[in-house]
Image 1 (cartoon, rainbow, N blue to C red):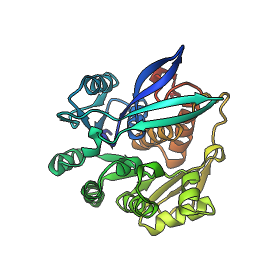
Image 2 (cartoon, rainbow, N blue to C red):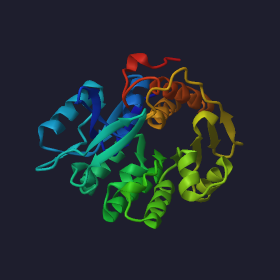
Image 3 (cartoon, rainbow, N blue to C red):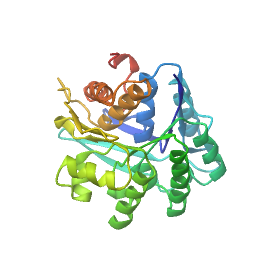
Length: 305
């Protein structure tokens, strides 16, 4: 079995401290991180493509080159004249990371402006993955364009996977944020929320409350990530199941924990593993990733089982 995995969102320029006042440049972004780990964990029967918009500048060209070298398809990425990628800076103080962002004029904000191009890319995919950050960078009109195509994909039987990944700084007001996240969930067949986000922003008292809320929105399959407390799965009509986390020997950088879990989980699910097997593998991938610096680590470091 094989097919096409399509991730939709924003990949940014990452600047991190490298010592002696120097900065190290890289590229990362939540949906791209998931695509990276899905590509690393899927066999060659599956293609993994990224859908975004980039500029016509040297950084955009370098980012595209990096994606291609990683085996991630870039044919669906539009180039917009005069635009550039977004950028973020990681600051480390007393062991704690903080982030500063520059993305107001990023090309990715226009990723859904060409509706025909978006439809063609989604129609060619078997699984489509997006996030709350994807929705958060778009105008209300572009959000509706994207969600309309995703609803169409779900109705056609495609797997539409959504990580709410709630980031309040992307939204002008809380009401719109929560309403748009719920609209994203309604367009999806599989949702992968983090319980901390759901508790903080929706007021869920328990993992079970999160599952019931997404069930009420019409979501068929739900994977609730709860850090060290593991993962709870609610697939179809089967009873909920819990999968324990794998304890990390060393925690160096948690930036891409959820993204890498998603990539590993979806890869195993597409390869025919059960949801519980897929969650156990996703947890092993995330545990490995947080033991290294950076959002993206070498595929050679990842578990194979």
